[in-house]
Length: 68
Image (cartoon, rainbow, N blue to C red; front, side, top):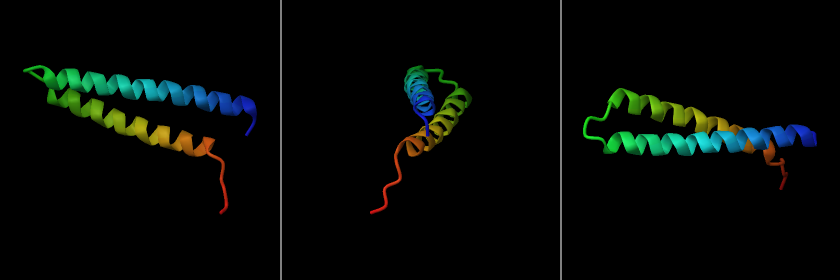
């Protein structure tokens, strides 16, 4: 992996982590509202899971394989 590839992955990772945090805050705000839209909450949670999977994939790409 070149330095440029690694930099691009790190930038995407940071963006995805920020989006994950933003969704977390949005879910909390929706849940606190008395008339919470449960369908929207479920959509946000599903998006968070997709983001978590993508974040894990990128972190695995950035972590060098070490044979013990």
